[in-house]
Length: 191
Image (cartoon, rainbow, N blue to C red; front, side):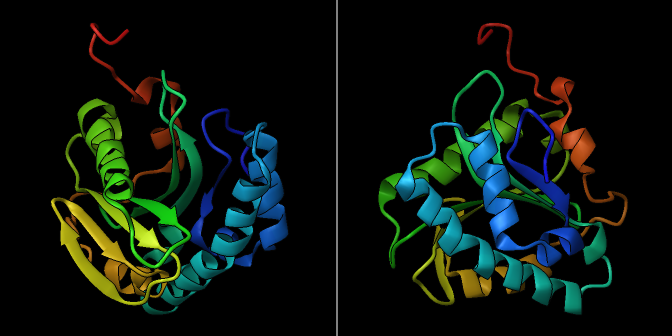
């Protein structure tokens, strides 16, 4: 469970996989005070498949216990929240989850905007790959790439994470470093 004021959940992969979905959902509800029934249903629907994919990664990647899951990360100085961030290998992977078969252009743009902001303003994203995944939860397999956004069903997330490039000089980002208040560095004109 997350006690961090910047996200609704953060944990290493093994803890995320082993935690009852109800407890994760309750943590998210505690964090997102204005979550309506539609948002709560989306969490109910998306947490189990994410846990399954994380479980598959844990079975095949010996380094996976050092990877982390962050849910509902609020971009500093904004009210926008990413659905999921995986801190895996030497990458930061942003997943935008949508309860449909095919994402809209707005869905793809949303994922791209999160990644752009993290690349430009987040200290921990400065010198490592930051990737955007748009995940229509009713789709299957890898559906392609539009601009810098990969589009894939939830069943393909494990394969995507396993195929990430790895820079051996970089360790996975620690959640504490990623969530640090000082990690987000907006331009002075934005403040």
